[in-house]
Amino acid sequence: MHEKIIILDFGSQTTQLIGRRVRELNTYCEIVPYNKFPLGDDTVKGVILSGSPFSVNDKDAFFADLTEIRGKYPVLGICYGAQFLANTSGGKVEKGDSREYGRAHLKTIKNSELFDGISEGSQVWMSHGDTITVLPSTFEIIASTEDVAVAGYKVQGEPTWGVQFHPEVFHTTDGTTLLSNFLNICKMKRNWSPASFVETTVAELKQQLGNDKVILALSGGVDSSVTAVLLNKAIGKNLTCIFVDHGLLRKNEFERVLKDYEHLGLNVIGVNAKDKFYTALAGVSDPEQKRKIIGKGFIEVFDEEAHKLKDIKWLGQGTIYPDIIESLSITGTVIKSHHNVGGLPEKMHLKLVEPLRLLFKDEVRRVGIEMGMMEHLIKRHPFPGPGLGIRVLGDITAEKIEILQNADDIYVSMLKEYHLYDKVWQAGAILLPVKSVGVMGDERTYEFTIALRAVTSTDAMTADWAHLPYEFLAKVSNEIINKVKGVNRVVYDISSKPPATIEWE
Image 1: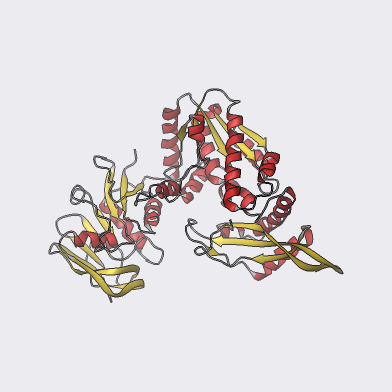
Image 2 (image 1 turned 120 degrees about the vertical axis):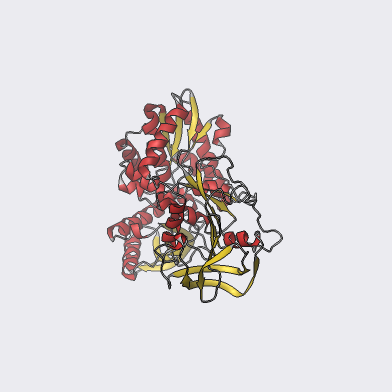
């Protein structure tokens, strides 16, 4: 087992970011709810307390009993975490004169191993309404800014620190240095890497699965592909992958993906189920209804194929760490239920195997590259499970899917050709249920509108519309209108998430 840092989550939007920064420093960490510290786990070497949407003075504020933690492990409190430590030790936290939000600069730094290599004037990012006004007698100020007297402190006689800024965010210039210093204080070995993950996971899978047989639903996406290759490394021919063509994939994707999987030496069954899905979706316009029909249809096809195989004990899934964290909502409410193929394990009486459940998306990609997978499989943009079914707004027909496939293919191919594909997180075309008047040659036309979407993001929690060059958009628009029969207008979506979502449905 890897030695680890535990991040106690008090509900901050940036808790996942703390985890990712620590992992980037080749150190394994786990995010757990604020009240679920794994007592007795001797692989824990240090603890980070996250920020929170609450004030420590709120009656509903999250409270953690730290008596088994403080003094036994190095502790770093961030923002709410720092205020919580001060408040529960006899200090005072009060509402600031104004909400301290945005850039600030460290004015004084006392000699402290936490601030090693960080100089005065270094930019930090503040985001809090409260501020520590009175420090407990054993707490010593080690950093201040122009407006915040206690920007950082150290507790005398115990390895506990607090900072009122966010070292995990991009705007804190030396945030990575600070987190790295904390890992040094924890004496972390820094041996968490894609190679070590592959080695230990393959060994664990061999032990967990023995000679059992596993089935896995492939989607062509990064997560399921990396899961398949990992399982294949561990159990070889005992893994059977099923790739269902629901008729809502991108142009030629079914054939292309099957060819890719062949290269990887995977045992894949390809199922053409287009007609089944088109029939079930006929006349349905409601997005939620479409998702349900596609999900149900997928389970039926998968179940049917699985029953042709003998002695299957396990279902493999490409669940990744953000899915797990969201499912473990600290307030006890589930934000999203995460089963990529919802309901399948129960229906088929299978046990679940999820080899990527502790990885962030960028780590999944690095693991894929470590295992020698082709770059286009690893760098592929996220693509929704219901596929083009939720990119054809309104009811779905085979004709509309073909129009969208052709437009989307031109768009994605041109993004690659102009070296823009890797600069955006996700891109795709959407067929709008709107026809408009146009002119082609001397004729008046009345045809569909295609909307193009491209966003930049690091984790899909938030996303900004990609500022693609006008010349490029002009060329794409021209190409689509000239080559795709049934389209006479192209528009570009300039909405960010929030308030919009990445997909339109």
